[in-house]
Amino acid sequence: MGKNSETLFERAKKVMPGGVNSPVRAFKSVGMTPRFIDKACGNKIYDIEGKEYLDYVGSWGPMILGHADPKVIAAVQKRVEKGLSFGACTELEVELAELICENIPHVEMIRMVNSGTEAVMSALRAARGYTKKNKIIKFEGCYHGHSDAMLVKAGSGAMTFGDPDSAGVTKGAAEDTLLARYNDLASVEALMKENKEDVACVIVEATAANMGVVPAAEGFLAGLRALCDKYGALLIFDEVITGFRLAFGGAAEYFGVTPDLVTYGKIIGGGMPVGAYGGRKEIMECVSPLGSVYQAGTLSGNPIAMTAGIETLKQLLADPGIYDRLNEMGAYLADGLRQSCGFTVNNIGSLACMFYTTEPVTDYESAQKSDTVRFSHVFSGLLDAGIYVAPSQYEAMFINSCFTRSELDYTIETYSKLINGVK
Ligand code: KE4
Image 1 (cartoon, rainbow, N blue to C red):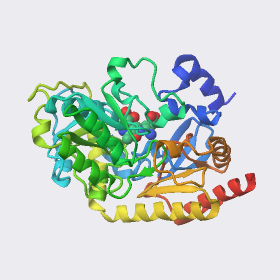
Image 2 (image 1 turned 135 degrees about the horizontal axis):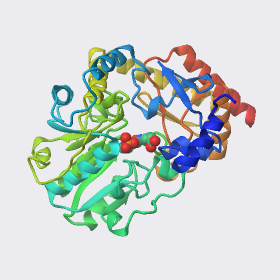
Image 3 (image 1 turned 90 degrees about the vertical axis):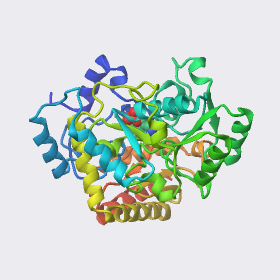
Image 4 (image 1 turned 180 degrees about the horizontal axis):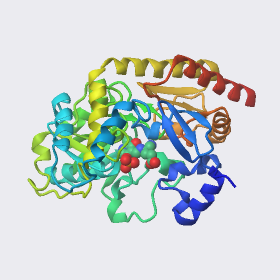
C-alpha cells in the first residue's frame, strides 16, 4: 500500500507522543489526520501523496520569502560542504549578529540560541539577573514558548487544548508569573502596584498572534513603555513572530516603541532552528561568560543555520519594498474575507486571522468567543480545496512574498462558499 498521511500517522503515533514533534501539528482541535508534507516551493506545499496546497502557515512564520528560496538553498548547499557544526566560533555568527545590530538600533548586542522558547527563557533570566527582581508580567493568551514560567494562560497550542496551565509546571516555577489582560494597561499597573518594586519585566507579543491575531491597540505598547519606566521594570518584546515580518525592525519599528530586550525566532533562521535574544548592551553584558547570567547551547550559532538566516535577512534588507507588498496583501486578504464572510477578521501586516464571531476580538476572553466547531468545518473544506491554514483557531495566517492576487482571490472565494454554504 502506497504511503499516505493516514498510514504514516499510525506509525508516528506508535513512536512519538500524539504522533508529532509539536502538539498543534496533530490536527487534534480539528479532529482530522494531519497531512504529512513531502516538499514545498514558494507558497505551495505538497503532501506525501503529491496534493498541492496554498500554504498560509509557512512553517509558522519563517518562510517569509517562500519555501525553498533559490538563494537560501544555494547558500546552504554550498555551506554544508564545509561541515555541519563545530561547537566553536565562526565568522557566520558574527555576520548575522552584525546584520541585526547594525540595522536595528535597539539591539546593541545579541545572543543566538536554537528556538524561540530558548530565546524567551534566556531573556527572562537576563532580565531577572540584571534587575535583581523576580516577578514577570505576561498577558493571557500570549504564547512565549514552553519554558515553565511562560506556561501560564499561554496561547497557541496551550489555548487550543484548553489546558492553560500545563501539567509538570510546579507552583514554584509559575508563582512569579503575573497575568495581565492584553490591551489593558490598567491591569498591568495594578500588578505593578501590588508587587511594589519586584517586577523584573513585562513580556509581550507586540502583536499577539497566538490567540489568533490580536494587534496591539493604539497606545498600548507606549503605555507599557511608560509603566516599565515608572516602576523600574524592563520591557521585553517577544518578536518571534513579528520580528523581520512587520518591518525589518519588527513591531518595535512598526509601532515606534523601543523595548529593552527583544526575542527572535522563525525568520531569523530562514527555516533552520535559530532563536536569539538581544537588546541594550548594559543588560546583555550580564550574560555569561561576561556576566553572571548563565546560558549556553551546543548548536547555538550553528554555521548552517546562520547561513540560512544571513541569506534570508540579506534579501529582506535588499528589498525594503517587500514589506509594503506583504502588508498590502495582508490587508487585501483581510478585507476580502471580512466583506464576503461577515465575521471578525483581524489583520496587521502580513498576519491575518478570521474569528467565527461578529464581535470585536481584542484579548484572550473575546478570542474565545469564536465558534471553533465552525472553524473546524471550514478548515476541512479549505484543505479539500487545496488551502492549508493553521489547524487551530488560535493561530495566524502568514502571507509570504510569493502569493499572487489571484491566489488571494481564490482563498476569499473558497472561504465565502464554505461559510455561506454551511449557514
Ligand atoms: P519556538 O520554541 O516554537 O521556536 O518559539 C516559541 C514561540 C515564542 N514566542 C512566540 C510569539 C511564538 O509564536 C512562539 C512559537 N509559535 C508557535 C506558533 N504559534 C510555534 C508552532 C508550534 O508550537 O508548533
